[in-house]
Length: 268
Image (cartoon, rainbow, N blue to C red; front, top):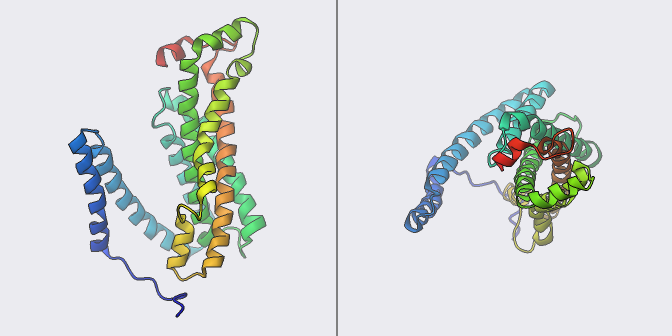
């Protein structure tokens, strides 16, 4: 007997509260092993609940209004927050690097989103929030994670290989040539999560979009096709954002004379 098309069972606030018990278990393990994760887990849980609750009402409002300026404004807010969040683990002066991460995520996500909306999904209206908001959220989120990993890894690589970089500089290499190996490792590290996900999708895990559509009653084959598009667009958005962020961030580590900045040595 087919269950496709059955209505989704509603989850109420009590069910969400029960689900929080999973985090309580992790917090207990953290306290037991003195991992120091309890505070971050608690804050993350509260923010998750509040932010998703607010976003649910915002999306409902956008669906009712169906106005392009409002939809675009929400996406821009996503990018603004993503650019700042990408610097959470960064050791540099965040306000100076923030434009780099924000612009990189905006361009990488924007190009990918435009491609998918216009050439793949092709909705009746390019600003249809039913498609634009969920796709933008996935793209921006992954671009943010990749950018964060790339910036952090690039700083670490420059710190670890500072002597070798200075030797290359002394031999006449440009800053981009001297930092080429650090850049390669930073970009490679940032792309590990989306590439790993591509390798095991459907075998090890069912991604969120496909799972959500199946729960909503969409035929599994159609849900799989949508997930294929998602799994292809995420590495593209991540790669574009990461390459831009690294390209613009490398010069900040060096002086115009192609020498490591003194303050960077102190920070790193």
